[in-house]
Image 1 (tube, rainbow, N blue to C red):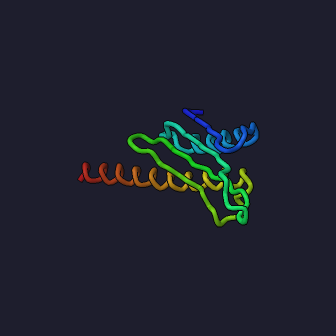
Image 2 (image 1 turned 60 degrees about the vertical axis):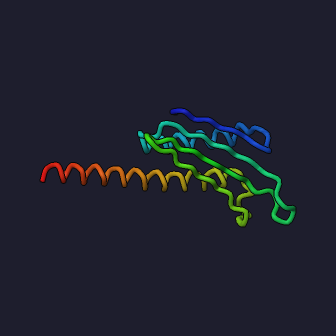
Image 3 (image 1 turned 180 degrees about the vertical axis):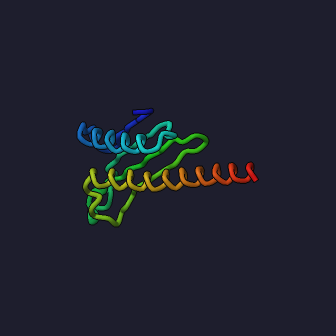
Length: 118
């Protein structure tokens, strides 16, 4: 796995959560070869008592010439009391964003190739 960095804040380290992040990051980097690194920060910040403790997941995905920042901070989503679900949601959003950037880059290279031939 290329350049994976995992940090835990306001929560004790969990081998299970770390492995879940490693699995999701591995799938992401195997899908897109151009990813240079992944930085994940998981936190369980102190929230208002009426909302419970909601997980906060931030990802930084390194791409050539660009960094994609993903923050899954759903204060209104009670399902995010489950850290696994919060991590999965963050990586799903990262996958969509990286795919979007990847497709734009491919489209630009195709257009550049077509204009050079004409």
